[in-house]
Every structure is written in structure tokens, then in C-alpha cells.
Length: 339
Image (cartoon, rainbow, N blue to C red; front, side):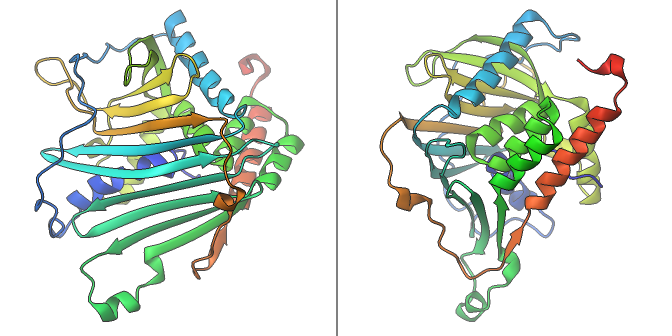
């Protein structure tokens, strides 16, 4: 089966909380022990989800243009530094995760450091991405806090996965096979960081509206979109393989708040279907950046990856093959279908 086109692990990481809380065999110990935190992303306006639109309107085209401008603007900063927070709502349960994001200048590639942690009951998931401007290392960890000491010392390698990809080779493949929109998307997914996040959203969603709505007192463009049908179908097949229904996990729409001045993505949230009153008060998943600082000096030591002792899997070729596949599919299209 072809590699599933999906949101980057950064966003799907929040859905770990949903999966852990609903997995077969009962709930996690301690998952309900603490009172749920107050939802920080409640829709104060009670905004109703917009109705489906059959065709792309000028407003929808403007929304997609703003998304691409936001992604492209990230490549122009000397540095980006921000705290990040994620909120997940599952019924009456609330989960929160916190972390930080740091990126240096793209010359032509940016050094990157992303740290991220979420706790669900006695399980803690962490994500660490570090790139020195050429090699992007990604370390994902799931840890049970209630392990016995002997079990903790004998922690299986399945709890920690480490991958690496050579960003320069990915961009060389892009140059070799032609910079079409499809191959560019595949290459940017391999670069990682916020550009990859926005790229993956572009691949998975179709946007239909844009309006003004402030975040933390700053004027923002609010983009709204829904899943592309072909993406939902691939997700359905993937979740059926896991013995689950995709509808149990899939939000109905995405909302992206872009700072009107810098176009930085201040908040990305995923919303369920509207309730009986026509409004969705809480997102299923919301990712928010705070204390955003652009073009400030950052230490190069932050972009050094310290090996954990787990063998790294090199996944560079997966992205190169995706670029080749996108180029081949583009070349095979009838001339009349090429925009």
C-alpha cells in the first residue's frame, strides 16, 4: 500500500491521547484521576460550521493563497522561537501537551528543534525533532510511568523509535525530477517543522472560507477547510486495517488562525460536527503557539542531536521514492489535465 498521506506526526501526536483512551482492554489507570483542565480554546463566539460548498469560490482560493503564503514566509525568517501547547477533548476528558519550537535560517535548509510531551494517565508520549541543517533526526517515545523497576530497566526498543533523513538528498531528488507542485509537496514533507505541517494540511484539506478573528488580542485571518474525499478514503482503509472506524477519530473541519501581520500560524484546531444547537463549542484538537519571537539570535548548540542509544532508521529513500512517484504520476497525466 502506498505510504499514507497524512498530517505530520506533530498534529497526529495529539490523537495518541484519543487512541490510548479508547484502546481495547479498558481505560488507562489514572486517566480519570485528575479533574479535567479548563478548555483553553473554547469557541467563545459559538461559531457554526459553514455549510458544504460544491465549488471553489474566490474566498476559498484566497484561503488557500494565505495558507501557502504563510508556509512560504516561514522560509524567510532568520529564526523562529515559540512555545506550543496542544489541547485534546475526548468526551468529558481533557488532555494537554506542551513543548517548544525553534528554527534557524534556511540557508538553504534550516536548523530545527522541536520538543513535545503529552501525558495520558500513566502513559507519557514525547516527540523530539532535531535538524542541523542537513540531517533531520526524529525520536518518538511512549513510556509507562507505572512500570516496575525491573521492567523499566528492560524497556523494549518498541517504546522508542528514532529515524533520520537527509534533507539535502531529498532536495537533490526534487531538482532531478522536476519542481512540480506535487514533487514540491513531497519534498517539503521531508524537510520537517512548521513548513511540513502546513504542507501536509494543504495535501489533506480543501479550504472554503476566510474571515477575520483575533487570537490573544492580535488580528488574524481565520481559514476554514474540510478533508479531501480521497484523503478520507485512505484513512478509512488504514483504520479498517487496524480494526477501527475512522469516524471515531476524524474531526469534520480545520480552522487555522494566521497572524494578519506576519502570517505566522498562531493556532490550528480541528473541530467535530456541530451539535443540535448548530455550534461546536470545543475542538477535538487544538495546537497553539505563544510567545512567538521572530528573527532573534539562537544558540547553534540547540540543533545538536544527542543519540539515545537506539538504532536510527534512515527513511530518506521513502521521501525520494515519493518524489519520483509524484513526478511519474504527473508525467503520465493526459495533456489536457495538466494545469
